[in-house]
Length: 232
Image 1 (tube, rainbow, N blue to C red):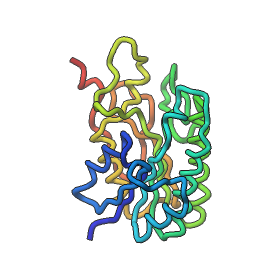
Image 2: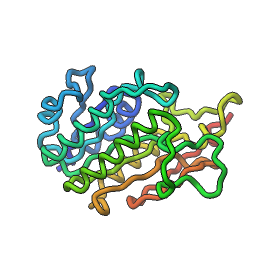
Image 3: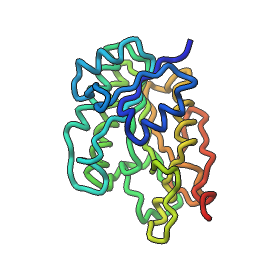
């Protein structure tokens, strides 16, 4: 029997990538405000995740809150809290929560060492601060018995081509995450037998030559693709 996996924010950039990459192997339930389910509505979400095994939470209003602006949209935190609570109350085994590399400032990072989850977080924006708040909330729910995996995702774009123009900072290329690497990571998390201590926080970027993030994880996931391979 296929694992039953729910994806919130399924019509967004990452949601579109995952629903295409996971559809053959898993029984997917797709949730998005564009298709009629509002994650801000806890009762709607709780109903939608009944009898599910995994919840992948991607829902986020990036128009009102992103790393380039100075705004906080309280609905984004509310949606994450609803996702944790609904997963716990519905008996969902595991939640995969989308965080961001912007939870720790990485522009002008001097390495070694690589940026790891063991380095105290210094967010680069209000957006990054909000992501940290959502990570910390996940720790609380892990103590309640929910398996929580929080992933600080690198830069994923619809074209699946890393930023390579001369105007882009090198850090953006170093933090690029390819479509295939993203899909393989999520599959490895879904397939994991258990989550150590009920909580894992990790970085996810591709195997870029000058990457500055430590992608160590307990799932055996290793990124393969490199931004440099896309250079003309």
